[in-house]
Length: 296
Ligand code: GDP
Image (cartoon, rainbow, N blue to C red; front, side):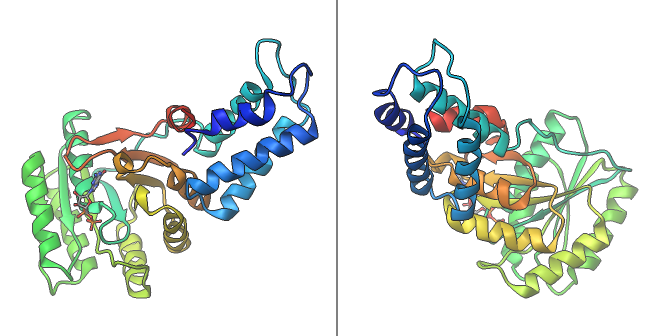
């Protein structure tokens, strides 16, 4: 998304060298370029406004050190603000709970929930040496339950069977009992998603949240959905207290707009990014690295 931002900024700023500070005119020109770049990256409009205003406020009165051109100075401010907006620090998964630590997955159908359950289970099992139980509460699609069974088998974690016709909350409660009985450290609960935000889905999700009291409620969102990612994020964040975000399909998204929007809209830290379909394609989200990468 920001691939050309460095060039754009040198274009408008570096012709005006020699001052110790950026002038208001310079900042306004640079802010225009920044706004365009964010628009092209499909960042949600209200997020763009807040972001550009924050950069402008910092740029006004900022000293430009001798070694930097005005373009570099502005770019550095953008990078810092971008890192801050993306959360600043890495926020690890929270497993601090009386076992089993319950992770509830939420998101639209096709966002990558089931795939992410597999990736997380693998990561927790292999890196954290946790015993993991997974369960699907998608009572509408037998194929979804079967998909999770297969994924669990592939990564070698326990799968708690569920059936269409059971109530999602009854499945979830039974899975918690099973996790306790088998001394599982972590229980990951996959949920049903619809293709668009819908009231029934939200009611069901809120009910599951209340029944499970999870230590993490992770919103899974497809990075490639751009502006829509922000709208979906708002709809979920309004109904359940999200504790983290997993941004999937980041491998197919060169623009990066969804990361910025979703973080801003939900206020929840992005904890992981999905970078491929395979079970090992999950990376910890580093705000500074992502900021540097998207700035190019
Ligand atoms: P769910 O309906 O939310 O459970 O979504 P699925 O887990 O079934 O994923 C939907 C599709 O997205 C599948 O084809 C996955 O292989 C694919 N997918 C999920 N995560 C990623 C990712 O990080 N990168 C890529 N390229 N594909 C992904």
